[in-house]
Image (tube, rainbow, N blue to C red; front, top):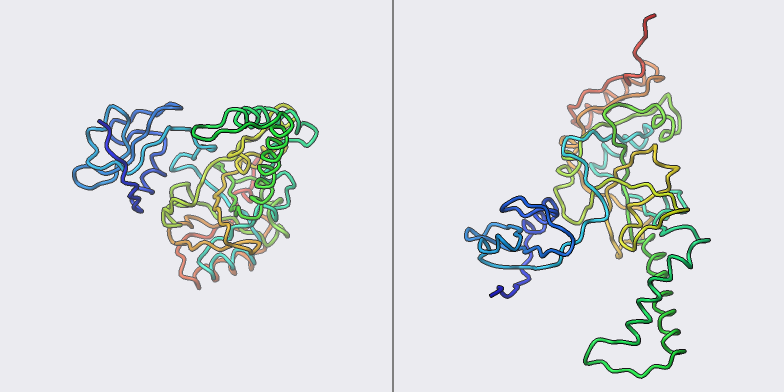
Length: 319
């Protein structure tokens, strides 16, 4: 007999769910879509996530749900992440001890949070309209209706419009911090994300350091962006902020996302432990010597011990 769910969520349980979303923590098996994941506590009151075969390890079941894959994939723990910026943004990072998350509608990409091309909207809408029509005709008991065909269509269209409205509103309640995943530097990223290349800075970290530097908060989601050809594909309802157009594929973006419907600002700051985050700092290969020294002094001023080096692109060739 299944245990009654207590719905007791602790910070440790939320963190465990975030870090082991796809696996049973007891036997390591990967969940398949539709399988049941059981979250709760073992005999020592430690949080666990169990598959059906390991439910005997649960003293208390806090939650039970049908597993569905997340709309993003997390990088490996030691995957190298880069953030390129101008000097002013670097000083802001140091002085605030926090990372800036821009509101999605202020990132400059009109497709941010989009489901697809407007010219293909009707094709994307049709499965949802069919579902809404079906549920209007066949409501779940004990609800009983006797809608006319015109009323069913009107209700289905209204529900579709409401879904689209929520999608537009989500651009103002979703906040994003972007990183570039790469084992080495990218000259294109240097040029793209600094206002003046001579005075540009790049910070290097890992996925694990990024996650730990923000306190392992389970409401901060970190994962890879997937790039779509919107002429052939669409983003799902829960995928939109994890999808971008194919033309941006060179960015190899990993993003951290926070949803905050209470924030009315164009961005928000998230506290960050810079000693954990900043593993290495680089100045642009075109930077003058005095700028390199300025970045070293500024970094020391704020108590950061990470080494400050010239970009490796500055290395000289031989022939």
